Amino acid sequence: MLPTLNGRIQTRILSLGIIGFVVALVITPVLPTGSLSLGQAYRVTLSVLLGTVLVGVLWELLYHFLQQFRWEKDWPTLFGFVTIVNEGALMWFLVHSTTLVLPRNLHPSLAAFLLQFIVTWMVFWLIVNGPMRLVFHRWRLQGGRFL
Image: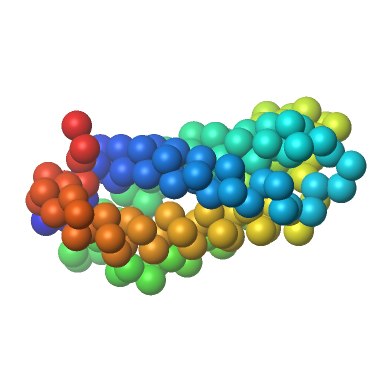
């Protein structure tokens, strides 16, 4: 069964929230954050994560619209992986060019942003497309919905 829009949104929020939080806890101390204190560095990484989750819901709406033009109404797995490029570019713009996500004095360096975003995305994508399908086998049969 294909994941429904509601199921993809729930999966993104719950999985990226949990997996992203754990990844942020682990990698924040080693990110090249310059003169930021550890508390400020955690504020930056968790704010970027929260922004990614919230903007991700909007991405899911766009992806759902675009999928309606495909015969099978779903993306190949590789498309889901490659979305790191457009989602990462938009988040970098929002983080670095606006104050929607962070105040101006807490903008991360490009290296810190890329490390956090790429590592989080890779871990998230691997878990959702691997072990999660085995452990939560009914999740796939319910259209990706948890609730």
